[in-house]
Amino acid sequence: MCVLPWINTSSDGREKRDVVDQCWHYTRKMVFYMIGLGLGDPQDITVRGLEVVKKCARVFLEGYTSILAGGKEALEEFYGRKIILADREQVEQGSDDLLANSGQQDVALLVVGDPFGATTHTDLKLRAHELDIAVEVINNASIMNAVSCCGLQLYHYGETVSIPFWLDGWEPESFIDKINKNLKKGLHTLCLLDIKVKEQSLENMLRGRKIYEPPRFMRVNQAAQQLLAIIERRKSRSSETDEGCLSPSSKCVGVVRVGTETQNIVSGTLKELSTMDLGDPLHSLIVCGDCHTMEEKAVAKLSSYYNGRDTKEGKKGQLDIIGLGLGQPKDITIKGLEMVKGADRVFLEAYTSVMTGGKEALEKFFGREIIEADREMVEQKPEKILEGAKEGGKVVVLVVGDPLSATTHSDLVTCAIDEGIGVSLVHNASIFNAVGCCGLQLYTFGETVSIPLWQDSWKPQCFYDKICQNLESGWHTLCLLDIKVKEKSDENLVKGRNVLELPRFMTAAQAAAQLLAIIKSTEEAGKESVLQSDQQVIGLARVGTKTEKMRTATLEEMAHTDLGDPLHSLVIVGETHPMEQEFVNMYLNK
Image 1 (cartoon, rainbow, N blue to C red):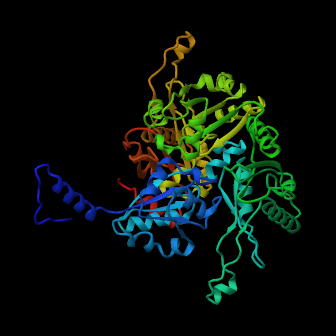
Image 2: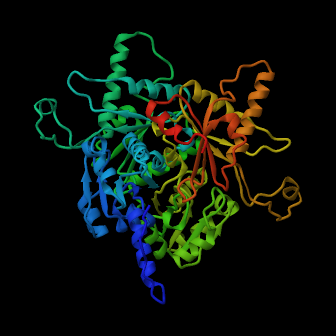
Image 3: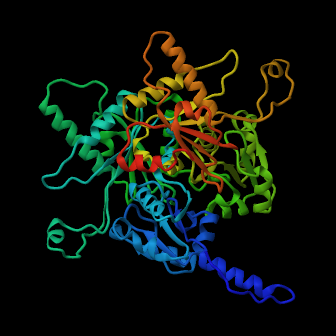
């Protein structure tokens, strides 16, 4: 606390205000910002993120868990300021330079992708909490949600795996067991491929020499070759064939340089992908589980479009689907903002999610008219959206979150491709990756579920079974909670009346109450419930906004917890690592 012995005050009070401002400066606590940079280039930062970068005293770039086109130099040129490269040692062992030594000065750490895409950054927030330093997170897209660009639905992924480079005498196989576990459940697997940046050889580490190996980035074909080698190795050990496991004929998708101008998507068997050179990094591999017909169609269309690029320039016009992120107009990326300004028509998809301030706030920020696209227009009359592009114009569709988080938007993309219209996606944060804010590692989430608001005569329970299956596997579950916007009652539907119900947004408490009701009915039927009333859960509200709130509680307690205004999500906590549990415990009794 600052105590002033006197304050000289002029007739207009100016000196007093100046001194009070100085007092505020000396007592103000620093803010440590963790800013996601997205996937491709400097313009993938959000408007809000760029504003913070420009005002911070020091800006660090975490430069070893991923890479960005152009590197530090490209960012410095775009931001017009100096950036300090923070390597593994500084982030993981020398965090005092990032945190404790900064006094009252705001500091930003730039992270390629989203801030909580790596364990390192979760640990950094824990250390900031121990030092009583305020942390603000500005989310962005990461491969964990942008992988939807291939046409496979994010709901249908199981546990994520990492495939490391094999070394002489070290050839781990455990990742294939996780892939097989997902396959047996019918789930897709996102395989994150190894990156070696600023690594030392064993000899140089032992001799204490600061000599680093050249950077290496695993390619899709290298990952496929390692998987095939494990399959062959295990086949030679056993004469029995394990049904439902990965094989050379398993369907896979390679996604490379996602979010950049040279993005490519290739589908084929594991054997076929092992022979393909897909060019420069970064690469990811998806092993497909059971595909819905709609997913198969989307994968075929998108891989043909991006791999062949025969319609990339667009014989007609252009459709750009732009993610708006989580909370407010300034969560749009700089790239997305420029596209909005240059478009002939701009639509806002207004029913799969909502945004602070709605269409009016976006129109004010963008300084232009926006057309609201309801469910009927997007799903049944997409030609109204595409007609401008058919005539050679540029059409933008704004989507809260990330462009392809909902099935609806994949349909719109494939429809545009069929019409010979050029398509591009501008990724942004969605709850699928921003849920990492609760401290649970995204790698260890299982299948995502949607919990609908029950009605008197309609009380589905299929989501409960998926939650139980995730728990049995030790996985966390992200529960997406129902949104009712521009819905009609059954009576109005039958009578053909265009009368809409008031918007309704499911709360974490309502979701918990429905799950408790299912547990009760299950046990009354003489069955044991895997999910129990004392299961630890996390309620999340308004993620990515200034009023973000999280609460860790039992399922029973959550049913009586008020987290305030929408949007809410609920996480069912599976098996936790000690660091995850430490993070989760920060939100007990809040």
